[in-house]
Length: 474
Image 1 (spheres, rainbow, N blue to C red):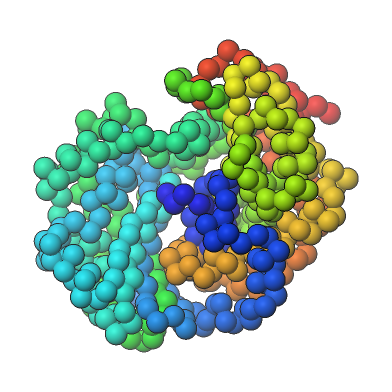
Image 2 (image 1 turned 60 degrees about the horizontal axis):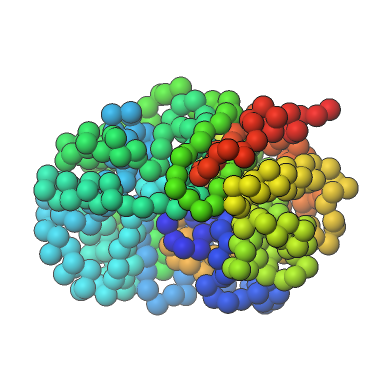
């Protein structure tokens, strides 16, 4: 995952955590707000065209003023679709992306990328995999052929696969990602409880056959969207269709839906700090679009900070919500981070705090108070909400400048709704969000069972039952 991730995952691309590092471009929020007002929406989002092939694969494109072109294949699969015997298959297939195919060696793939002056990437999540290629517009035929070849025809050589598995075993992981896995395992029964970070104890089950079975079982036409920007749509369809029309159209397997139940997990770790995460379910997920967009505003309203690293969310100012209400009053809290993970019919939202073990009760008390505060309209200052809405729109407009995010946005919306949501509709929804709307969503969140995860020393971590009762006091 990138070092700086944003909240707007379904509308703009992947979002797992609103992390607390300074913005890479150095803009403050007022710059973002002026940016929103100074650009025409049609300048940012061009005309979108959509074609559905006979086998169910969808092709979506958007016109662009950029000099380059980007093409991506987004597949509705990920760790949710791994069985217990295949934990880690998604990560393994990602690490083997753009290696070798039946048509091209790894060296030939690199040569073809050089020909188009391009670059490639592959990313994964619980519910999607995304293969992306960027190159020159006039090299579109080779870009499409290279992309489809790597998705449809991968070759998994056992020696290369074992090297990647070894790399997975040796990889370290930041506490927040471990906590997110623990929260999903605690909160859900079903596929959403599957880990993104495969336990080392399961890696010896992985091999080349596992990777191939995962690809053949999940990479089917009806679960794919090919998205492109900066290209002519008719030309795109002409190049894509012959390469994919013979792909099988297999619907998603009919599995029992993930059920949110809440619960607790602890991760023992040798850490100077203790981390604790409190989360609740957003019922309906992206199917309840207004609630999901309201949650975006709520996340930016609550913001986050890291001691010595600035304040995130609505800015780094001394008068922002997290600085005034948290950092200024509770200096023992090292970091305070809001996060969200939203899926088609459910989602998680909560707060992660970290501090020295002895200060954990105080840090947890901060998180509880902040979550309860926003469940009543009177706890939300009008100006704070106005600023959060402006910043949310600023994030959306700024992220639309990213070609990769733009493609993921188009493809995920087409997979979910069968069409792309107009940008105007999203921005108008944000404009209309009231204090009552935010409080309603917040109340809906904490009315669900608490999901709780901790990492580090657990001696001072409050009992799950006592914390849960705090959110359900009549």
